[in-house]
Length: 349
Image (cartoon, rainbow, N blue to C red; front, top):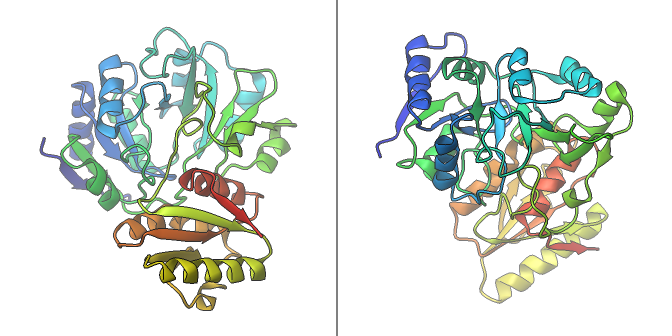
């Protein structure tokens, strides 16, 4: 398959390109597109064959539910059987934006899109190209991240080309994703809302709007055999090709431990990668050191995480050692992705 790449200008989104992309979706094809979080791999959410094509293109297990992206809030009520008052308040506060909410689904949504579940995950992205694309494609786009399953998510069109060129019909290039981590996912189908995946919309932000919100234990625990209710809950995600270990503890001890581990690995003939921050990068004499940004700027670290993991894939390192991050605010989302990437391999010092 010849994958077309179309570069777009946010200040002047070409309607002809949008029509072309929408026609591909209506014909049952797949289009990768930018959002404010990461790039998505879009298909017709109401067409079971399109959803199966998404799973095939990614090499993704078909019991891993897809998120339905909408452009008009009114469209939610066509696919959600019940929308509680707390969900309405959440949408008032955070939509459009990086927040996915889970509801009981209507019969319009095929089980192929929801991974066989009777619930549907729904998001309204704030990205202008995403909104125009969803509108041109009919209003309901099923879209996981636009990467090969298990690899780091894509934050640029170049990443999408690397993973999916030849597997899908079109890639819409909108430059680098602003946030760089996937949306927060909250289950609103239960009496007390539960965070199933942390993201830029944090627990504190939500509790300021609707009161207490729980956190699913699967976010911080290793994978279980439970059927996933949201993307990223069951399977290993975001993994670089090299073995990744997270080192957790006081900063000085983390640096000391990572330097010792790197030296030991090099003595065994291994090539080492180091994930650090601007503050600590000069303190690592061993290996290939990459900084995620300033520790004081969590948004910068979040934006660069997947990019750095992919950069290591372009090197020949055998193992990677990474600093950990505070489990507060968006730091919880950063650590969630790192833990998944490392298969929960953590050294505590």
